[in-house]
Image (cartoon, rainbow, N blue to C red; front, side, top):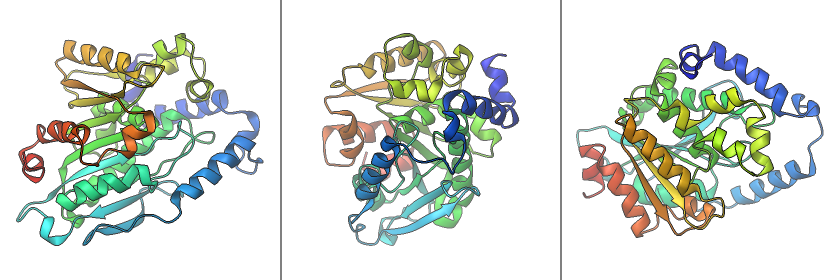
Length: 326
């Protein structure tokens, strides 16, 4: 089966692949929600709970709509941050930053401080709507189905955008780590999300994904977490690889990468940009001397890094440029 056939057949084939991947990737006890948690899972849960305690107060005038559903599962929820009335573009609907958290495809949360605080403080105060989503994760939900969740969330957010004073056609996708992989995959094949009801979006900011070329990653020495996410099947690797799924006509990418990581994600970002160029797709690489977590948490602080991301976003749309003062 070709990669294109995979996306043309979604969601039915995607669900079938997700079910097969679940059996291959998850240990037998993980297929039951009643299975006891492993020590690693318990530690991750404690760390996540600690991270979510005592969130910073919202900037003045910013309103948060918490836990809006886009599906029936408890993880299929989104938080929406609305700008102050005096920051909204007069007579126009606001652009939207659509954020997907990371966490090795098995942990993390839409409300974690590194995911939202600095980004909301910088961009919602300037008139953007900021959407941060949760999605189902390993071991119960394989990566293919996670991509489907992200596409569903995007479609739901765009459908509701006018009610928030936002423009469904002015979405910018953003994700960190595993979330960067998921938004990069969706951006590579925009027809996949559009078949779930999504509108075209402006572009995607991928924050430090080391998983742009899954087959190459899996063929080299790699961390165990990638085996848990992608299994051992070459066909599955290809289907979940943004590099291999990229098509002509895909929206622009900004590929932010850490120069401090030993696994050198900038090499994958540069290869992805070269592949994009052969297809006429715009992709720019932004190497940053920051650690993996800092790529996420420090975005929004006043820095050359934030301004470089804003320059990319401003290039996508005149209203975005206006709100960013460019």
